[in-house]
Length: 118
Length: 109
Image (cartoon, rainbow over all chains, first blue to last red; front, side, top):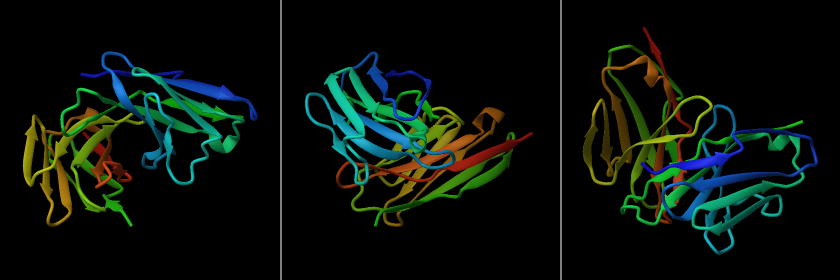
């Protein structure tokens, strides 16, 4: 099956610093990648949809200047949390949709990145 | 508004059968997905339904009734490793995935 990796898996940072999270599709090309946020015992919350070579589409309420998304290639998307604050602490998960996806379009998820801002 | 409802938590016994229900109200429908998520991990794909009826895949089956806005995930011969959260997600008319809050399934020996 399709494999998506995320790096780092866990990060602790100080308030005010920026953190970059990478999402890679390892064995397929992904025209579209999605970034989710998940609080403990809560559902996935879509933050933004990232299309290769174009600007990301952010969901309502998500600050695009705070959560910078870059999808520079068909296998890599990055999420940068700028000037992180403790309330940004969460589980961030990316998913990728294959170009060769069948019409039911499964999203393949990365393992997630746990961010803790002190 | 768009809404997906599923029970918060369920408990079942190892070796038994459990049915997790999901009801949805969305703007359009382009398929329903079930994902499994173990604590601290990302979701993994279980099943997809776009037509009415039952889709069987090993110990797991998923059912859909579009007229009723209803789906269920059926898990047979439960194993301890099936303890996880099960997420129902519907793809709406904009091809966006709308996620339920998940059902935490606890398996007891």
